[in-house]
Image 1 (cartoon, rainbow, N blue to C red):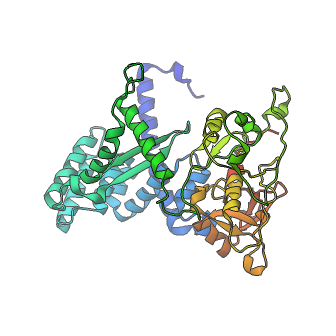
Image 2: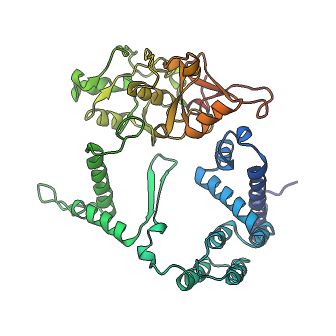
Image 3: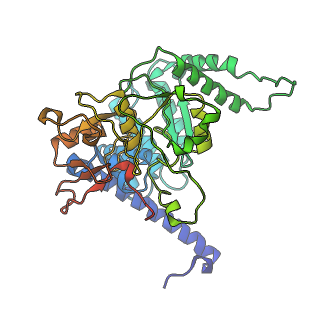
Length: 437
């Protein structure tokens, strides 16, 4: 019989927490070893992804960045058994292993071969046990890089430049950057005139923090860039902000826009949607876990509140794309070879991104795939198109994976028998998840 946590003594609490932590360390090491084996033995067709990282993200609760880190560790430790042994026996943390692996894989260019092995062993020893300190390990690596690395000072090394952009669980974007001195100077120079405090007209002091002023300035720079005509082409168009929202949720736009702001062509028509109102009917909650058609939706960032969506819609050009009750664009038939800009917007509204189950790469990185191939007579119509990233586009063409448009007018995917012996159809990425019946 398992003892409840509240029944443990203080000594037992400490002992159990330490024991569980050790077990977690060993399980992490086993997961890395399993991923290393998957990486060498399991085919891309069976995974359904270019490598184990995408498969891990789609089948577990791991984030893409965590899954990528696990795969990198699996590949790295295969080349350095001494690091793997320290992790597998539970004497070195995975984080310290990642730090030492980075050094071992890209050692200072002037460090002799025998020196590399000696340095790696010293770093492993310093990272062993509960007394290991990340600061000391990093300091040792820094000294080695200063002594045997490139003559270019770190502040001038553009090869070390990085910019991380991650969406949070609550729908915000977190940026983390590491730039050389010149790139940093460019950024601070661009931000400077926009970050000065600006008192209100009545003389009230600007109470924004420096961080808030920098964030506002960065947004202003992005507005100026997107308003410029000198931008590269992506997906057949210059990059711009796209907002998906139903007509019903924009019914109060008459106060801030007019009919001339809506662009249309022969493939769209007016849709009348029922007025939204409070109801106790269970049906009111049916789309609580829907595909984004019942709230505002940004292709990169996801759901957006109706109020903010309306605010954006008051200052933009609207393109009408009529959707049915399942969130499928209507009446966008085309017979040309390539997907039109209007069709691409409709596909993005339906699929949101790569439709392959578990993928969901941004729509800007996808291609319109003809389910019934164009060369075989397949039309460029909405019921014959699906958005796929480059990898999954090739996978569909060169494997036994199949895709079809279901009765809900959304893409469904049939895995090969090697993945699922019963070949049960799987919904597209945007349609997966819980639904209230």
